[in-house]
Length: 280
Ligand code: MBD
Ligand code: FE
Image (cartoon, rainbow, N blue to C red):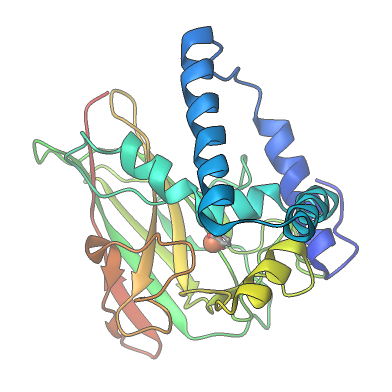
């Protein structure tokens, strides 16, 4: 990863776009009949909107300019993940029995530092925020603990910012991969993240403010849990009573993913969450 030079939407957008392009090596479906069906329906849906609202040339040109700006700001990953990914995730996980999934979002980075089954995430010596002990067990749907499952964890800091996407934060801050112990258990020492605000100076923020929407996601923890012979699960955990838990702009909160931490011995808070993986 290159260093992020700017605190702007374009700065984090450029990083998100680059990260996506580096990972998106798998070919998309190229079956002609399916491309035809999906692209035809998508365009028909937009034509219906034009007709329904009597969209004017001024509005059409504003839309064109805005689409161009989304790309210039590098915000396609952000925009698409906020407004469409939850639907894709719902379709993808419809037949799973285990832990509910949620969207990946634009700020995952592969290859985070590896740790054992328990310990702190990489963080600054003076990392602000309420300490949080996040621990639990990984099991199969049959109830068997899974030893050696990978818990790949990432989150925003106490200011709602992600390392590698906002400037001035050490690489891999609040990102790490843990591996469950012989009983399938893991324990991560971290901190309670802040809610995330969509950047206000980019194309996505411009649409949000023009439409009078709010720009917030509730505080959340991201995780990918995987183990041989099981389906990888990508999900997020939220905090009971937290701001915007009930009106996430990304529509990615599910009841089963809401944590209710309790005070921890020695300060801060703690919460247990067990993950259940479907067979591959
Ligand atoms: C985030 O932190 C996030 O998780 C998603 C899905 C979209 C925007 C910012
Ligand atoms: Fe996030």
